[in-house]
Picture 1 (cartoon, rainbow, N blue to C red):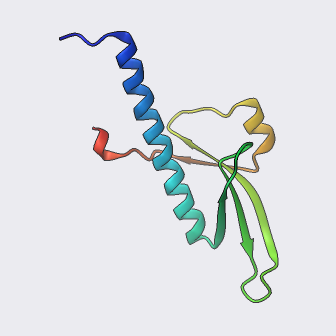
Picture 2 (tube, rainbow, N blue to C red; picture 1 turned 60 degrees about the vertical axis):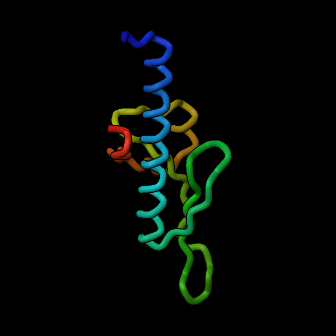
Length: 96
C-alpha cells in the first residue's frame, strides 16, 4: 500500500518535532548539570540560562541558548538574538 506525499510529510514533521524536543531536553539537562538555571523563552531563542553565585545568589553569567539538532541551520533572527548554540544529535529511539 503506497503512502501518499502528504502523509510522508506529516510523518517526517512529527519525527523532526520529536527530535527537536529530545535535543532541548538534553540541552536543559546539560545546562543544569553545569550550574545554570534554565528558563524557556517565548521568542528569540530556546532558553535563557542564568548562572548564580552560590553564596550571594548574584548573577554571574546569563546567556540565550538556541538548540539545534542534526544539520539544522540558524535563521537570521536566531543568529542575531542568540549568545550560544547548543548542537546535538539527540534522537528519540522510539521512532525507529
